[in-house]
Structures are given as structure tokens and as C-alpha cells.
Length: 348
Ligand code: OKP
Ligand code: ZN
Image 1 (cartoon, rainbow, N blue to C red):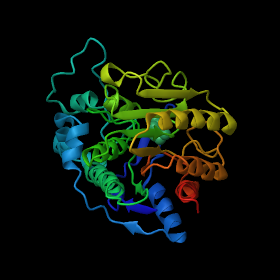
Image 2 (image 1 turned 120 degrees about the vertical axis):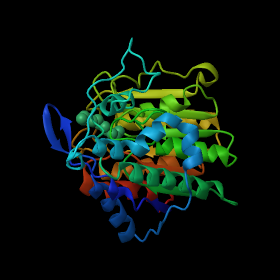
Image 3 (image 1 turned 30 degrees about the vertical axis):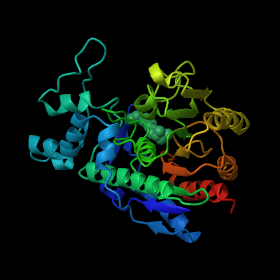
Image 4 (image 1 turned 90 degrees about the vertical axis):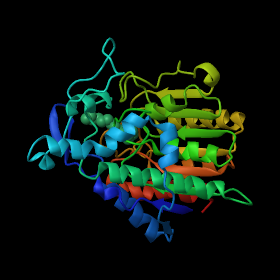
């Protein structure tokens, strides 16, 4: 399978985040993408450099004022105070409920709060560059699949930071630009009338869901840890089925924390049945691998061999498919787990 690798990923390298009352090293590290790259190379899979500028499709999935903010955020931060280039900004106030989010404040930390869902998405000097290059990789992976003449093609967007928590106008959960949404919208723009998105990351893809919630042309299906106990907590429940034209085109399959691989594969089967019934022209897989038993921030128990089973099941859908890397924080196992999915998808 052709991999579009975001070579610019390492420009995003914040040092720490807050976790359970402590300041800890970031879980979402540059090493993650390098482990996947090394495993792809070891297994003889070629890497391609992304060749598409995602600017126009980004403008279709994200709000202009959010894109402007993100592109300038580091510059604005370091302009505030000498030494800020050695510090990470974090939001401290958010426009919840009765507060206004239509106005953009002047204050930088206030703007950071306006455009964030949590304080868990640290910025660094190269965040915009890395995230934009990742969106370019997603658009390139979609273009490759869309250009297929005979048979079904698949591609892998191997990039970080991940994207599925990023909404139209906010960052969150280590995510800044929604790569899966970019891939789905790019497939639509290239002529696919209907696109299904399957999100298998441990965490609910709240950003992707919300971007397509009112649309019937993009189906969103997700299996994930129950938001009653798991991040992102405020979206991902089973009763979220879509709205307006999109009613019936959103399917959440929340699973109890700590559930077995058997239960997970039962939910995958339900997801696949819904995708088959949707009968779309293409599939985007938000490939989070934090369902792995060894993941440090998640509670499911898939083994490396289970990722081969996942790939095989997705291959049986017979759809042109774009895989987009999302989470997975057992970094040393990430390469083998990701490559197991994509190889099994192709019947290797
Ligand atoms: C991103 B992805 C808060 C720690 C928890 C949320 C997890 C984000 C997961 N500082 N962070 O879906 O793998
Ligand atoms: Zn995740």
C-alpha cells in the first residue's frame, strides 16, 4: 500500500502536557511516526512525499478564523514576552454555555481558549507547519485513491499530530487539523458521491462527527471507549444519530472501558454492516491504534494479531480506502500494529 508520509511531522514537538494532576512528557511524540516509518521500510513498503496543497479543502472543513489563528499562534505567543519561545502556551478560560464565542478576543490566551476544547493540546514552534503538512498528506492519500482507474486502491496517510478531535473551529486531544475530514472531503470533491468514515481509535472522534453531523453524503461510524468515563467525555454517545439532512448518518458504538477484544470485534461487525448498507464510493479509516493492550492511556486489550484481523475485515468491504493515522501511544509497538492493519487489508 502506498504511504504518504508527513516528513514535516517532527516540527510539532511540545515537551509536556498535564495528566492526572502532573506535568508529564507528551504521549504524542515524534518517535511515534518514526516507528511506523521504520516498520514500513523494514517490510518493503514505499513512502511517497505528499504532493497536494490541502489549503482549499482545509477551508471547506475548518472555519477561516480558526485557520488564521492556528497559522499565527506561535508567532503571537512568542511576541507576547521574551522567553516564550522556551515555554508552551496553555488555555485557561473557555467560552462555555452563556459566554460568547462569536467574538474573537484580542488577548492571546483568551483566543487560545476560544479555539480549544481542552488544555491537553500543547503547541510548539512548528505545530502549524507539521499539521498543515499532515493535511497535505491526507489530501494526497485521497487523491491517489480517487485517481484509481481499475480495481480498488488504498493508501495510508502516516502523519502526526493526529486529527480526529479537531472540530471545524477548535483544537483538542493533541489534534489541530482534522486529517480524516480532509481526506473525506477531498474524496467528495474528486467525485465520490458518498464517503464513509470509520473511526477505530480508542477515543471518540468528536471533531469528525461534528464536521459531518448535518450531512448525508458522509457517514460517520465510530467504536470507542464510552464517553461516560473516557475522553472526550462530551460527545460519542449512542443517541447521537445525526441532524437535519444527516439524520441517520452518524453511528456511535461506545464500549465499556476495559472491554474484551471479542466485544470490540462484535462492535466492528456492526460498524461494517452499517457501512455496507450505506453503499458509499469510498472509505476513510481513522486508524487509531490505542486500542492496543499495551497502550499507556487506554483500557482496551487488542493484541498485535488483532490488528491483522481488523485489516482483513476492512479489506472485505471492498472499498477504495484511505487510512489516516490517529492515536496509539505504545510507540514501540505502533509500527507493527499499523503495518499489520494495512498488510492484512491487502491480503498480504
Ligand atoms: C488523542 B487520540 C489530558 C490527557 C488526556 C486526551 C487523550 C487524547 C487522545 N491532558 N488527553 O484520540 O488518540
Ligand atoms: Zn485516541
